[in-house]
Length: 397
Image 1 (tube, rainbow, N blue to C red):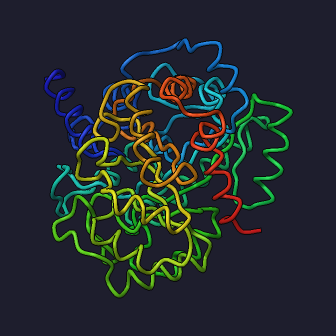
Image 2: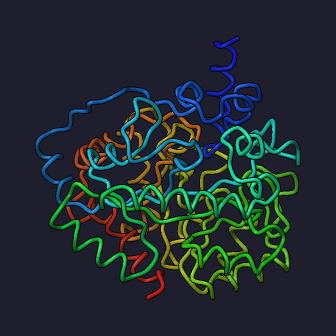
Image 3: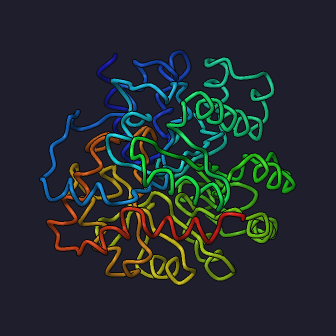
């Protein structure tokens, strides 16, 4: 049975990315937050310690590395402490030289989620909330779930002795980067929302999320929403009238729009209407590897035209392989399409996916980019410089 569960998990995770392997019902129902579950769902192809070349390590130390997307808040771990499973915690972020990570709140995952077509079914995050003993308000409200995860992140930051900072404003960003220039043993995070179902059918919730420190929102995740189609939905339509209002109000509230799981029609609609930069925080490009979620050439260029970023994911379906060289190849193909100033990285660590390494292995990406002939300037841009620029422009003052 365990072998069958493991195989099903691996297939589902590779196909969908963030939180997808909750499809393994019995495991997710009973032990979703346990070390056993994470060892099955958030795998690495090779555990550290990881060895990169002296040249790569020296360059990596000079970078401001930004990972645009990880799902580590869902699992109930205390991220201040090093774990022997999963992908990410503060000690491993520091070991990997990661300056900033986008931590996402996924608030609804349907039972039996798959890559191609998902209908409304039993919501497995409800079961996770029960299993982890989240507050009663989270049992029915997706907005409450996101707010609960934000509170957990703040609590961990407050109790981290300064090792973890939550970034909400440009002032936070500037102050943190100045501090990190003197102390590379610290790291930081910003909050994002994976799917507008989190709004609980009320656009006024955008202001609540913004006030709670969220700075990025996806119009859809694994299901079509009343706002927009999902790449994994039934209809896979574009923006609804309410979705157009969502886009406008999100821009006014200072929330970046994340198209990582959006349907092709939704992406086209957003690109036609957006007045601010948009991102695909964790994705792939079809120029490197085919896939439902991977972006065609015109949409890669379209995101770049808004001033936004395409974040290359680390799992095989996104990057086309099981090592850092595959990630680098996808980065290079994205640069060919978007230009170097519009490409970043979005690992999807702890998103129920298998990755080549955990957060401590991030220097391996720098090493692979060197091997592919990128200049130090271009590597610095892709590994985080572009994301820092975007955050500096997008964050409220």
